[in-house]
Image (spheres, rainbow, N blue to C red):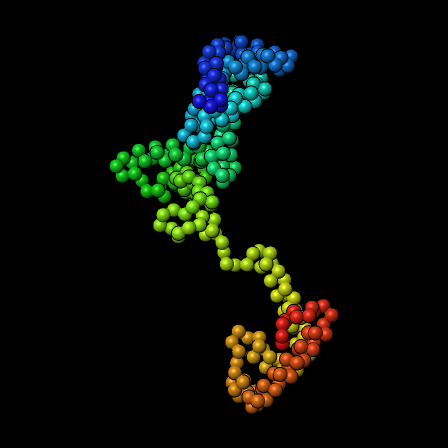
Length: 293
């Protein structure tokens, strides 16, 4: 048995032996702490309610977390309750401490139950800790023919005041454990490698995409400025032959302009030379920005 397990057993055994306190004893210890800062009185109050903390911690065993950790978090909640308890509340300390103990354990469960953080809002926390119980109750109420999953999600959503979509997502999360991306692929999946290998995309990285967009915008600006060196017919030919997605043939373009295809080729060559000169003479255009023209 590990040292951690032994300490947990000793803690539980010691808590079961602690004497119960009456209302006046609780209030007396609380006043000694709040008025005189008597730490011994606070520890007496905490020690007498350790069995309450352990009993509440045991209700969260189904989440698969170590019982010793749950008890430790329960103790943190118990200490918080003892530090804040006031006799003016006119309630028993056990009633007051139960809320703090449960809150401390719930926060611990939400932080450690899954590697994916969830349950950040009060509605999501209520959904996380009540979904299984409410789903089981609805399934039992349906008898041999339990209600459809969508109907159950709707009923749970109305009861807890959340969106049915959130219920469906939480149900999916609670239905299966986390999967490590470094785990090997299961039988029937692609041979070899880990799940992480399946996440690689052929698309450029975000910084490369941003660089391509910025450079592309610069090239377009330089090109449209260089087109100002061409006359109207040269621009029409360059657009039809070089800038459109589908390039027109010399014959088609010549027939549309009423000239021979050889004349189209000559005008195109002259226009490309004008563009090359305009682009290379631009002060802000780096050499080789467009490749060979």
